[in-house]
Image 1 (spheres, one colour):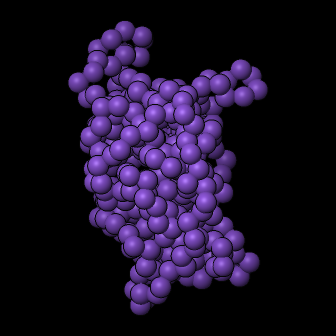
Image 2 (spheres, helix red, strand yellow):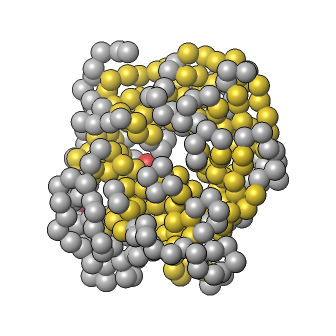
Length: 327
């Protein structure tokens, strides 16, 4: 790894202090962890497009992917990395593992993979490359990404041609990428083999549920389940996006309702692999999207304001069965 280099730190956007809509309740939250029983908005937040857990805090990505912000539950914010004044023109979504943050930076002079610690200090830089895909960690802390048409692990080229974002399984034995013509390419790294599954699906996101099951979010608003060794995927539930949680033993997705022109409402749904589901309580007046597991529930973004929402989940609650009954 390269020596630690001071990060580019931009001034915190004035938008962080923008008041949230009065229809969305806020609350004074503990400094670490979250076990709330009421859906709330993190005070003072706005202008975020996604969040992911970062230790006891959250890592928020600004609209347009212009900056990564460490966000405490009391609303305290610290910009860890920003485009302004730096060498890149765009930043990929970030992947977090054990306090380390990895993302791709792209500009006119090429692309690179950067790794920061939780304080925003650069601890590694891989590249430059002509082009690279979004990076992702496996469960052991190995970093996977594509660059210049090849798959790499911790900067080492593997014997697979690949492009775009890659999603490794928790053990790192398998890696999944969206296939250019539809479906998903699943790479078996120890065996050096590749197979294409769910060929009819246009995949917009994916999340592993252990090493043997892969969840796919599709452009038609369906969440599909692929099992290792099977090429045909089964439908689990209707939803936008998918985020697996080992703690909850299920995944989170969002459901949106529109009038044919605009989205009129949305909610966050927990679902198990059997198709049983339950809606999470959301702040009144919010339109939650991009949920991820956090603490005893979930974190999500209010699509209207970019505020960060914390949503409780009662694991003892009965789930609605796929056919509509309760379980």
